[in-house]
Image (cartoon, rainbow, N blue to C red; front, side, top):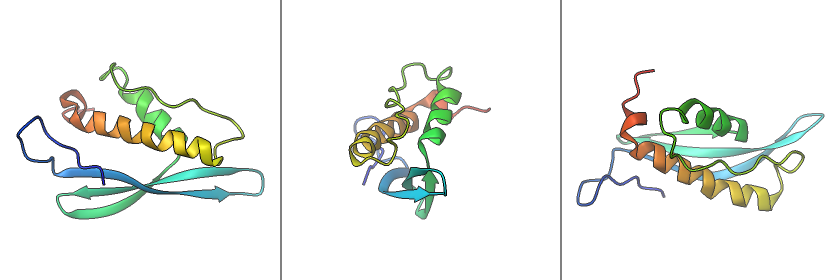
Amino acid sequence: FISIMAPAGDLPLPLQIQITATEERSSMLKSWSVYLLEVNDFGRKFILEKRFDDFNQLHADLKEIEPSMPPLPEKKFMASTDASVVAERKPAFEKILRYLLRSDAVVHEKG
């Protein structure tokens, strides 16, 4: 479980996020990976399903506010369900989420 910690000595932040699993989804023409994010917000837990494109959009939307944000993993067409690609992306996405939750600029963004 990714516990987002406040600066040294402070209590953990009330918002916690972890990528608990990934699932492969498909349609008639293609398949893709879905990342299942468990969010714990002051004890209320819920699951979000996000794809690479969702993380890509989040990254693009917040890059101007937080230019030091960790980079996204490379987009790989026709390989999004490959186990090695999913294994590479999961920690990169978690690193981005942890970084953003610690960012005062992002957390207090009014947009």
